[in-house]
Image 1: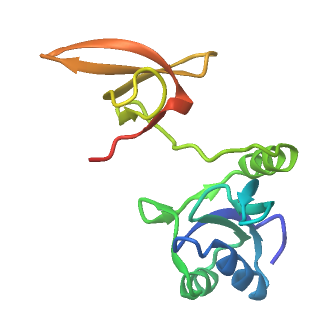
Image 2: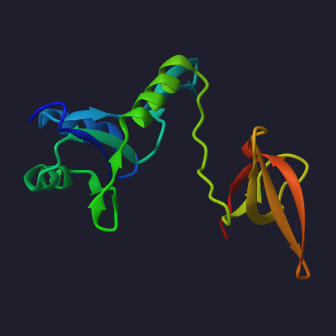
Image 3: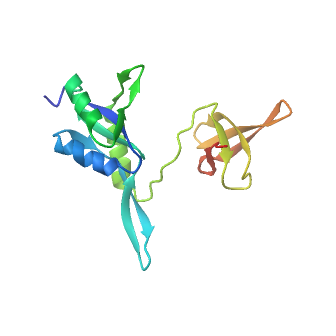
Length: 171
């Protein structure tokens, strides 16, 4: 298998099994990348740094995805599935893997953040609008702000709010 023919694929694993799945796939001679972020953890008597998955539940495998390789990956304990779109495995561009590596290697305070799409229902978790619910209607360009519509009797008002203050809506 040549390096030029291989591509990156995302693998979805069981919760909190990313490191074990990564080790098992490497034992099968597969090239893997588990994006880890370094963070502080409080112990009883001290604070230590720990490596946590930057994208919980996901890791990446670089290979030529023949049927037998795909079957080996899916049979690995802890693997739920290879990420697909319309029944075909999704190829992750090398540039995205490189960008992820660069950000995680050069920064200590990287935080996981939910990925929002326009139309997603969201809830404000922090700040002066805490508890407000609405729909994401646009992402303001260049300002890293979300604009959330809040419904009032078939009307809406829009507020700009910091993206860090918004979480996905859960009932």
